[in-house]
Length: 414
Ligand SMILES: Nc1ncnc2c1ncn2[C@@H]1O[C@H](COP(=O)(O)OP(=O)(O)OP(=O)(O)O)[C@@H](O)[C@H]1O
Ligand SMILES: [Mg+2]
Ligand SMILES: [Zn+2]
Image (cartoon, rainbow, N blue to C red; front, side, top):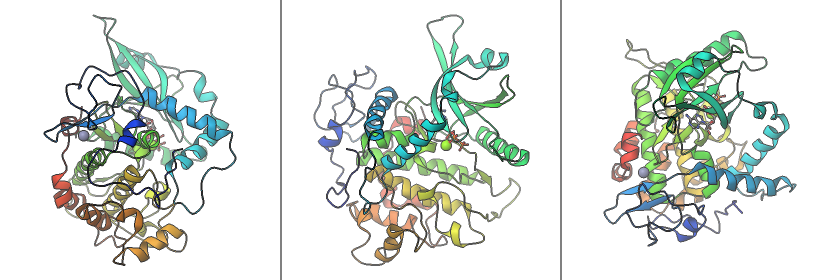
């Protein structure tokens, strides 16, 4: 079962591999690529597929496979659909339980999306190839893979991700245009190894817009956490540092994301993180401005939304992105959300957090991260007072994060 009890299963934070977690990994045929190294538990490279391993010199590599992960999640889903209720109420919300609820509602309204591809315009097909299998479901539209066959060598193909946009029911033209503009204009102007590369915006034959992006074969961080329960410490640390680099970059560019969560963090096969889905993105400072604009209004997804969004008329959008990164780190380490909503009095886990963070004994889910340097940074990221909260730049300068080793893939974004 994927639900993990924090009370009985603290997350080891000693950097040592946990055979139990590794044993739960899909047993897939090993790819020949990064196999010259020894897996952390002593497994030889020709043994079944390993997701993550560390070499003797401390360098690490990832090998992420989506197909097996999806099969595993489908199996879980099938068994859960037959059950009425699955999780203990005194536990903080698990990512798995939320995912099952979401899949249930998707199933109710799905079939039309599943039947066939979009009506593809000539330009879309000519430039990026034919769209086929669905790789992701968004709120209103799907994401598919486009296969562009090499004319000189038909066995070779280049893959792209194509996201369809639809105007949401009740969404005004103005709001729809803003969403499109935010998403395309913002993401296509970003150039960073940890931010998705957006290539084009085209219309399909129905007149719906399609955004073309680089394809990330490692899937999204959400399904990786679901399928693995928790990540290795060094694995989570590497993803976190990449994420903070991406966030520091977008903030330097005058953009805040406003919807950071594992679903919006894509992975390449070798473990590079790419921030995606700028549909809620905001420009808080224009190129000619020195001062950042404050923002207003609750935005994002429940457990990742910062507390000031509920209580302040205006707040710094950069600080809410950093808050979300703290919640994401905890999800990677525990497989759980810390709370459903960071609203005092509305959520027992958040209310307890506000009390416990002031006590010497601290807040249990964070205390189980055994390295004090790491815990302190997490507490400072999850500071309910946004003016005291660390910035992305400060997080990267912290002793803990400075020492985190990023793999070559994460450095370069391949
Ligand atoms: N470039 C890509 N490569 C691989 N998978 C992708 C890519 N883009 C999106 N996906 C998959 O599709 C899912 C949905 O994509 P995305 O987050 O961009 O859409 P969305 O959530 O519908 O956006 P919105 O909130 O604007 O409706 C992602 O969580 C991911 O699983
Ligand atoms: Mg999304
Ligand atoms: Zn890495």
